[in-house]
Image 1: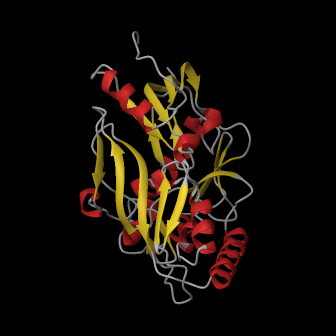
Image 2: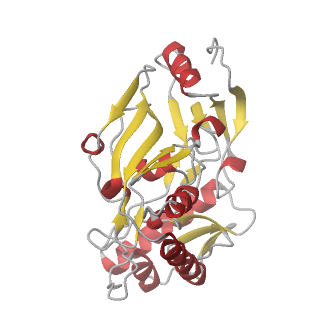
Length: 307
């Protein structure tokens, strides 16, 4: 790739992506662009040849980059995009702001975005994936979001524009989400923080939070999303059908389905992206054979396998 636009941020050629994903795997991107601010991003996309693909990347918490890397310009937002402001019950956050930071800052101001506290990743990813837990979803509280289109235009989107679904939404091809505004109910700051502490404790007891994982590997079968409530039914959760298929603790190379929570794919130390994705596909095959259910990946997989 040649003749890329001049930028004020950082543009790095042949940048390995393994250290930018939570699973610590993946080959290099053709380029990694870290824009200084929204204007820098707009100017870059406007000047970038239309045939050059771009891939917006958050903190890599829900991502497998294949070992051969990514034939694209990866755009990763950083310091210029992580501001958080609260005005009454309205919370505006940059796409690079961490979900946990947004939840805490909102709670300080008596605004209930507590469901974001245990979600790994950044606000851009939360909106893109309609992230949720405890029966609450990003779509429930989103008021509006701002994107930069592949053509470099700054556009404001309403929740309807996203066509939100369970763990999915629609964004124009190559668009980069730069900020989101949420409207959420009021709450007592002390109670909100106490609830988040309890949620964290429960998460640490039930999930392999100390291991290298990318959160839930597969979506729960349709209609069976986790609410975290006491009366939640577990017959058709992803972890349950994986258990029933005998795949809890299964390994392939350095990849393992966590013995602690069988819907968590972990890198035990030296896994390749091929190990991780391959094990995931073995799990899908086994689950289909034992229950007739086709599990859908929740972790995004991108890039080329190693030649």
